[in-house]
Image 1 (cartoon, rainbow, N blue to C red):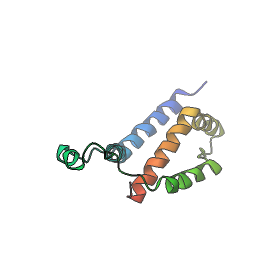
Image 2: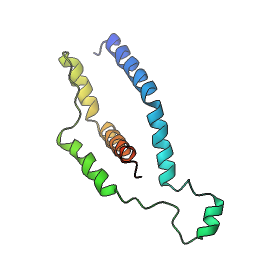
Image 3: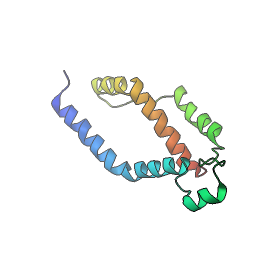
Length: 117
């Protein structure tokens, strides 16, 4: 059974992490809107016509994938002096949903880092 204090400590850590990275999350949302063509207004749409794609060309996808795929050779792991905590955290990190979230965060941060998206 997981200790209640350990759960509380992990939730507190998650709350601090969310607060710390909230600006980063907002930037990810803005970048996704940009990649979807939100920076074009109605005047742009009239000027360019209906045949133009609203979404900008993503010319760096291969570079982003190359950087992100390095993660698969050395995935994140939880390392503390508490082996039971390490075991719980590492089982959590290897769930399908969490791995997908990690890859998405890596893709987003790589795209932000490059400033080319």
